[in-house]
Image (cartoon, rainbow, N blue to C red; front, top):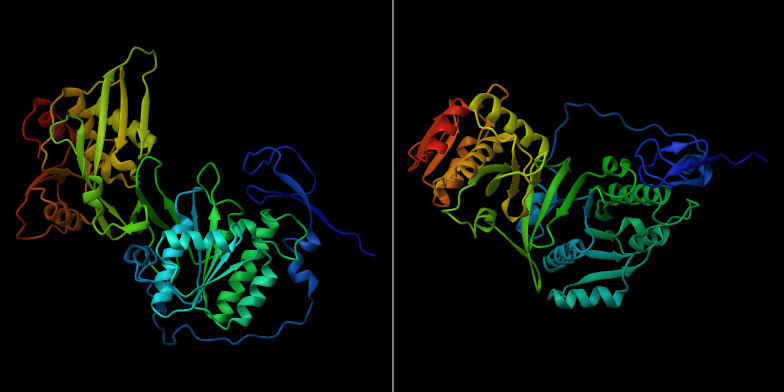
Length: 460
């Protein structure tokens, strides 16, 4: 009898070792390496059924291509994040913090699809059927024709789906509760998660049913389980939000059938999630126009322009090392802007505490916010408020030059639609709309803008 091969797998990142050790060298976590049998684990599938391979058909690249068939849910923000709807036969992974509203979003989406005549099956591995029905009653979706199933065994789920025909959508809540007979480990481990996801993706591709998988996140904000799961699925979405705010953002980080970095904005209410068609009004709703240190940034999230307020507070520090606190932006990017202000503009902030916040808890990742951050910092230091009807965007280089950014025309159109009449943007910016009723101030170097803001003159 052949000796069983034993492997030691990290339950946090999926790294495989030949012997046990306390700390995982790949992710740095302690006490996450567990002994597992390779014959029934990650490599168990090909070893159990050894058969002779059958050749597949080879097709030329120059054949006719068709647009991916999509299912429109009717929830505009969800369809926007997915690139226009749910693609048939695709596997979608949605992650988010506990209690953020993942199950609420999927229940509303499932009910909207069922009301449009599509067959939807909701598989709950964490809650009983009665609990799911209570949520449906709260969301006013109890009358929809969504079929429910409380099951965690992958083989039983696939058998039930096969008997139900070919549903248009299958929701699995969540992948951490799945377990397969082919894997000899506890539910939630790397082996079980990978085996369950592989089986569900094979079902989606073979049947044409779309499968949405719910995944929990770690304390670092990443989807728990092996990162290979994110490579296996067709789309990865993160459902984000701050505890003190009612809004939620559905952010696309991977999409094989649409654009990435797309967002859908929702607002949490007593009866579920409400779509926010104009998120700029949400993030600018409680703005104080006369307060120094506040600048409106015209940003882009995928194909959508979004206006948010960037708040800065510069105060003298009594500490040997001044504090640098950032919420909603990259702290390394803030350090670079502070260095450029010190070296090229004479703005000395080495003895001041600097606090930077993106209003509403929104998160910005693009470097086009450099100019708005610099304007807010200088405004807070000088005590001069910026014009209330002005917007800022532009990238700052290490030499102090202001570099142009993409989609300048769309940013200006969104700002003009919301009532802004002034803008500060990099010189030689392309794609500016014609016939606009907006004053445009083009700057090529950062010291010019700093001088206007510090003097309290019209900076826009």
